[in-house]
Image (cartoon, rainbow, N blue to C red; front, side, top):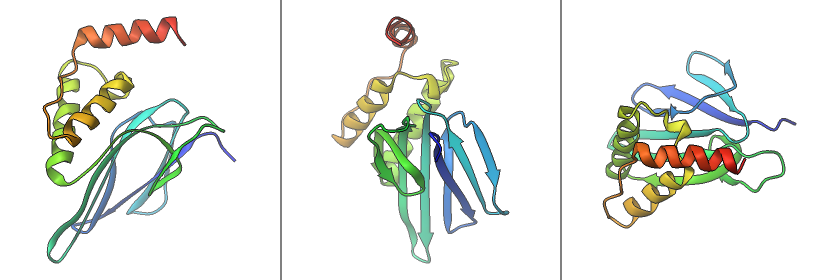
Length: 154
């Protein structure tokens, strides 16, 4: 038994794609030319994107931003993630997934690694996009406040 979170990735051209949009994995295993597995240490945040299509078009488009949990912590199960993780954001449907990817891109323009962003921002993004509202952009001031909060409350 490990305290790491395993994410199974898959790429079958034009049919199924499962990939990590951001996150710092601790270990990687290449299973074959289409499959690999990544392990994330407890506390690490990552974005897991799942997409699938059939002869008629896209059938699944989903993004989950998760925090890898430590052994014994409560987790939410997510297909392809073992044992699961703390869900910070969970959206489906390409328009919503695209808005999340744009928000991740916006964070990266600040020279901030999305894996270091305050978890509350991802929750805010989830809630606002789910409600059809415009989320607040992540700002360097908010990031600095998060870093200070994290340092004083480890």
